[in-house]
Amino acid sequence: MPSIRIVSFPDRDLLARLEPLPGGLRGAVWDLRSDPEGADLKEIDAVVLPYIDASAVLGALAKASNLQLVQTQSTGYDGVPEAAGPLAGVATAAGVHAAATAELAVGLILAKLRGIDAAVRDQQAGSWRPQRRPSLADRRVLLVGVGGIGYEIAKRLEPFEVELTRVGSSARTDEYGQVHAAADLVSLAATHDVLVAVTPLNEATHKLVNAEVLAALPDGALVVNVGRGPVVDTEALTAEVLAGRLHCALDVVDPEPLPSDHPLWASDNALITPHIGGNASAFEPRIVKLLAKQLEALASGSRPANLVQDGPFAAD
Image 1 (spheres, rainbow, N blue to C red):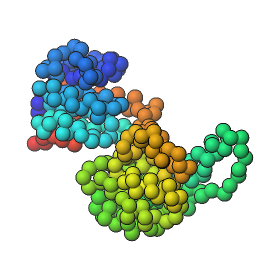
Image 2 (cartoon, rainbow, N blue to C red; image 1 turned 135 degrees about the horizontal axis):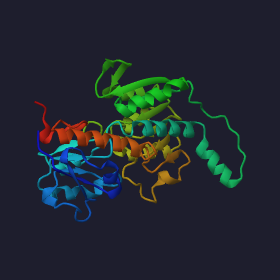
Image 3 (cartoon, helix red, strand yellow; image 1 turned 30 degrees about the vertical axis):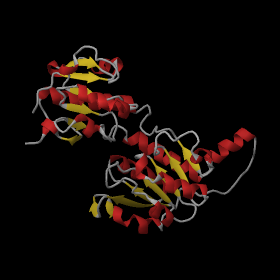
Image 4 (cartoon, helix red, strand yellow; image 1 turned 135 degrees about the vertical axis):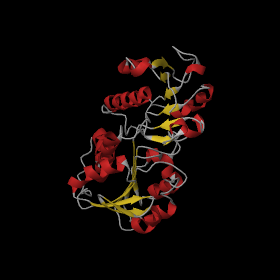
């Protein structure tokens, strides 16, 4: 295992919450926008990325000539392995955001099905318009993604008495029941009222929810995306939503953010939140707990958790 000596953190507050660092590790502050404080670039062995807008500063990783580990504060890691290079390990914050993102997913489903977004607009206009809306109870929900966040969403949906179908990369049976293959999405979509996308973004999932899948959904169906924006074909979804055939509730979009003149902003059939799935009060204590465990692993020469690229941490 590599020897890690200096770990950089994106801000002083995060470093302060983890000090004293274990086992002789030394901390530095580097936001990847300016020069680091407390160490030279060539001395930094491990980098904790910023939580917000990390993608905008990934290019700075190339300046750390001794880089051995990059730790994200997000579950997603789009572009991080490429920016870190093949010699560095990349670890994610898998698990940290699961509860909060699952909460938002259920909240978006309820808000859109029960017309809470419409009620807010009516309140602003002083308009009293009672209507019968779809309940979440008895809805057929297609959950695309069976990782940690998908598990938390499924767990939270259970008390709502839905008919849940789970979809993963391949067909299998796990401890929670049947998982259908992503290749079956079109046929599955035809019999479901709500589609929730929470799968990571990779070559196989880019535009996985495409025009064919969307067209197969029944009239009035709801598309929810709390995973990664490009998993859903924005152009195809926009066409269906503007036609009034589908509804959507999106915490992630493509491009992100949507341009201010994008037609989805003005559609009553769309509900958009600004990528806040994991950005809740649960985040800080959970990321600090994870980072503390990662630092202990580095200090003891152990393999860190949540590696998506081994780099020098390849298992024996």
